[in-house]
Amino acid sequence: MAKPNKPPPTSKNKLNKGAPPTDNNETAAVGNNIKKPASGEYRPLNFKVDAEFSREFRTFAASNDLKLIVLLREAFELYKKHKGG
Image (cartoon, rainbow, N blue to C red; front, top):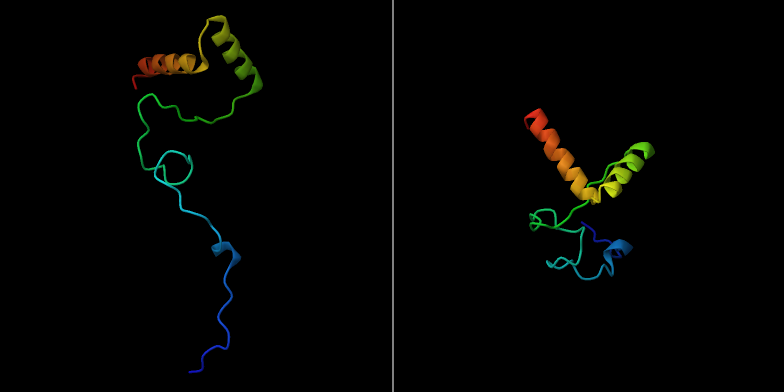
C-alpha cells in the first residue's frame, strides 16, 4: 500500500489551547459539576418572571426589610408546609 506524500493537515483548533483547567475553584464552568457545593455557598437559580410579579416581590421584600433570598426561602418553606412536601 502506498504512503501519502504529505501528512494530514492539523486542525487550528488543536493548537495553542493553553493549560488544562486546574482543580481549584478559579473556574466556574469546567469540571466543577461533580462536587457538592459548600454549605452556605450560593448558586444561581435562573428563571424569568413577569415584570409585575418582579416589581411586587421586590417591593414586598423592601417594605418588610427582607433580602430577596430570605423572602424566597420563607415563601418556599410555607408552601412546603401547606402542600405537605
